[in-house]
Amino acid sequence: MTDTMNFAPEYDVPLDYMRRTRDYYLALGYDNPYRWAHYVDAPFQPLTKPLKDSTLALITTAAPYQPDKGDQGPGAAYNAGAKFYSVFSGDTAVDHDTRISHIGYDRKHTTAKDSNTWFPLPLMRKFAAEGRFTLAPRFHGAPTNRSQRVTLETDAPEILARCRQDQVDAALLVPT
Image 1 (tube, helix red, strand yellow):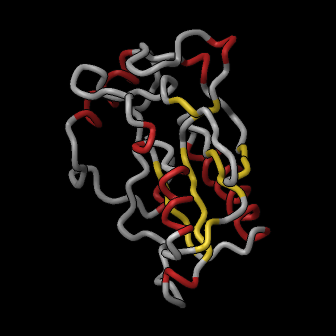
Image 2: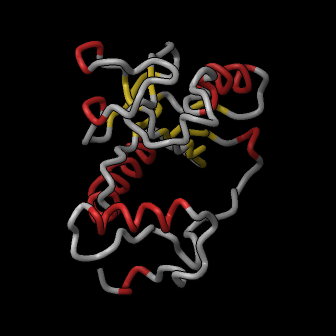
C-alpha cells in the first residue's frame, strides 16, 4: 500500500499485539506485513452546536447474532463464520442481539458479558430520554473484514450516507 493515506510512522504504535499481528500475517504467507490504519491526523470536526441539541448515531463493529453460525455467546472462541461483510443498520427504538465472537480480542483477560462495551444502545436511549442528545433513528454496523481499502472506499462512505439521511450531527464509534 502506498503512503497516500498519511499513516503515522511504524514506530508510533501503541501496543505490541500489532507486531504480533504483522508476524502472524507474514507466517500465513502474505508477502508483506499487515499495516494498521494509524493516521497522523484524524478528520474529526468539533460540534457546531451543544451535544444536547445534536442528533447522535451509534456505529458499532458488533455483529447481529446469527443462530446458524455456531457459538457466539460471551467468551466464545473466535468465530470467523459470524462475520458480516456489508454495512447494516437497525432501528434504535428496539433492542438488538449483537455479538462479538467474530472479533479477535484477548479472551484470556477479558470477558464479553457486558454488551454495553460493544453495543451501548440501551444506555444511549436512556441518555437521550434524559435530554443529553437526540438519538438517531438508526444505528449502523461497520464490517471488520480487515480490508482498509474496502473500509475506506465502500463501508465508510455508506455509513456516512446513512448518517446524512438521518441528519446526524455526531457519531459514537464503538469498535470491538
